[in-house]
Length: 408
Image 1 (spheres, rainbow, N blue to C red):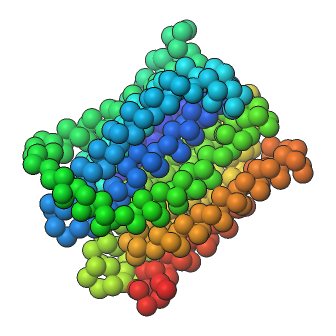
Image 2 (cartoon, one colour):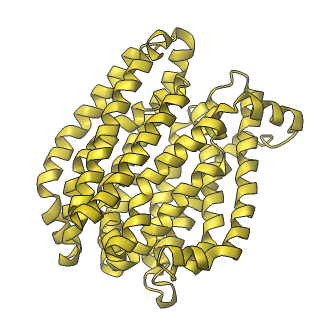
Image 3 (cartoon, rainbow, N blue to C red):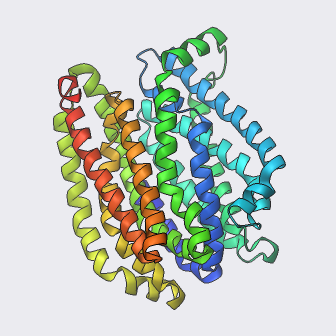
């Protein structure tokens, strides 16, 4: 848990410096790039990394791990070709021509994330929680330090956040990969093509259902940066990104740590007893006790805190954080527990939920612009849709935890 606290605190502390070095426009450009990369991560492993937890046989799990890594490598090569051919038209489509050169970093970023996702699930399968915690510390510390350093290099000023974050992710993947290979140096040896095909077919429900579902989820979460930039400008997206960086991202680090432990324990209990209701309620109670008081206090003080910490030009980011606070609270509580969709193999229901979320978010963003023509009204609608989604997700996850007879 100490590692989680450190990895949570570092980005917050770094933001005090980053907000003084970079402008809302710089953060806006980073937010657009970050959103593109997050959407791209859905394809990097075709969601096969999620299946690493499931095989009882270690050899099967090893081949699923190798399969997901090979898919990441293949996609990174394809994305590099696409960037070479279409970077300028794509940047023009988003009305951000300065983004074109930054897209050269994208294949590297996505490869690193894809490999890290596979290493994360492999380590999680073997209950290497300390290893995972230190990898997150490496990512937080290095991303923050490099982003600050690049901010003082004039020729890299506009892309410092992008390059710093990508290299920080790479350091995390290298750390985790080195530990995994040290403990199991034969992980990539004697790989059977027949076994790879067998595992790809056996867990085909993950690319069939989890990729479309994950794509809709990532699009829903990252549509603001991609849609609101031409609506309200890059600076507004930068302010929105800072509000997420300070509230949502640190909270998600803690929630992810809970999620790793819950996913492993829930998988074991569900396989043995066909239910994990007690574990679900126990985790829900811990998350609620930890989050509700903190987010309630934060709601009333977040705007003046932003002004005090970053300066008057970031006041609006504090206002946006206040608007999004109900969403952030439920995100913290529900995200770890939503692993029940994976544990209970309820990919079809998750896909349907993501379709509803995507349509809701799309309606909120366009409605906020065309009906109200207001960034604040748009974010109120956006937060409301996500809040409703998390409530439904919590109810369904609890139903799954009670066993297959309740899951439907």
